[in-house]
Image (cartoon, rainbow, N blue to C red; front, side, top):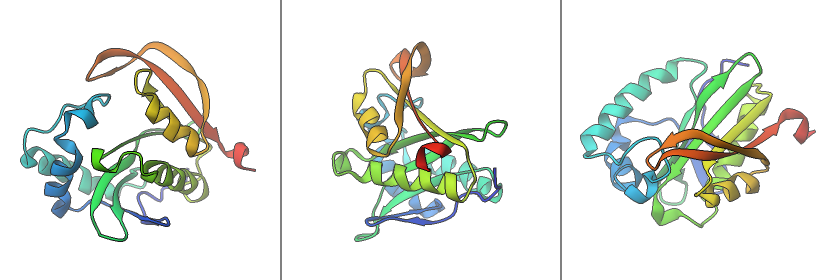
Length: 183
């Protein structure tokens, strides 16, 4: 793995960039306070923008590390931030990155997340030198699986009672793409 960390990525409609503390209010009101967004995530809705600001204050210093990958998704046309996508776990021994993402409900169904996920996958292979990119979703959230499929990931299987989110202990569907899939 190349220790390149979070660098700016541009797609047709999105700018994927590092978070700044000024993103806190829009992040809070956009997706962090929404129980529908966090329903299948591992964290509850934020109670206030102060919680979001605290989180950003823990994330932002991590950008100095070469193995920290966390992007805010910004619409190029308007400059509005609509979600985030990050590597939540790295396994350097096999060059694997586990990706997580969430987005403001207002932008669901507009193909922004597959666009961002594909760009991050490309970055992780082409710049960070990863061998494998993996993501999972609660079996009761198949729309997340469709995002993974649209980004070129292949279904690997379902692990029973393998995860925990706001719904409790859940079955997880796993998807991946490996470097040789792209050659």
